[in-house]
Length: 275
Image (cartoon, rainbow, N blue to C red; front, side, top):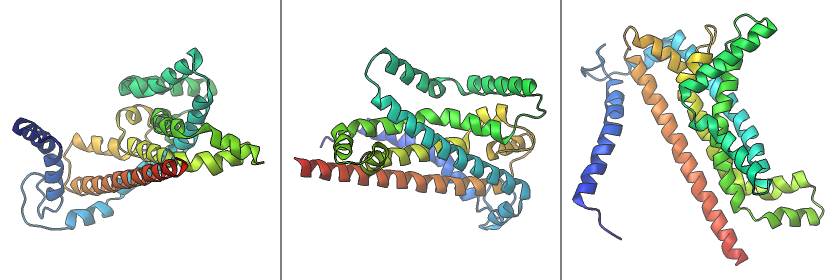
């Protein structure tokens, strides 16, 4: 095992400091006993209490969670089916084109995606003569759209690791194709599906740019609500909210890593038994 050079250690330490020091400062200030957002004056949980008393903040948080859960679940189902379809295709121009088109929402600048979707929704609303077309459903479609590539990219590698003869053998033994998929293939790609679900959920949870363009006045997500507060003054209860969100995302990431490591260990054990 090679030792790291002092310059490399200093560089990594600086990167970690710049990345996580602001977050830790924010977490510390969330326990501030005063109204200041920069000077610590005593320790108190009053901003956590104020957070849950704020009806506007709780409503925005509820909207964000509903949108994130529904859009991530939908994107995971569609993305898994799409990944299976892409994996079944023969290598060639068609497969390359579909893969490239699938990755466009991921590589496209978010502001371009947001403006394009907004124009599309407004155009469809004018054709159908619907007033106030922007709202939950436009946000839902937009979040599913930009989450799909991430789900597909997480599922495809797992599908490539599955032995295609296993499903065929199950069908030869009398198992229907759909049942063979869920009995043989699905358990093997489940870690990739779960990772794609968590990634889609986190992307939906903190998206602002696309949501800003496709949201309406009746349905406001948390990032948009926080942005509206920056025009005046961010209150310390937002620090409490950021702290809770950071901890929740951290727990989800730990669960994903644990789940993936268990899946890899099972795959290695299965490969060792087959050998």
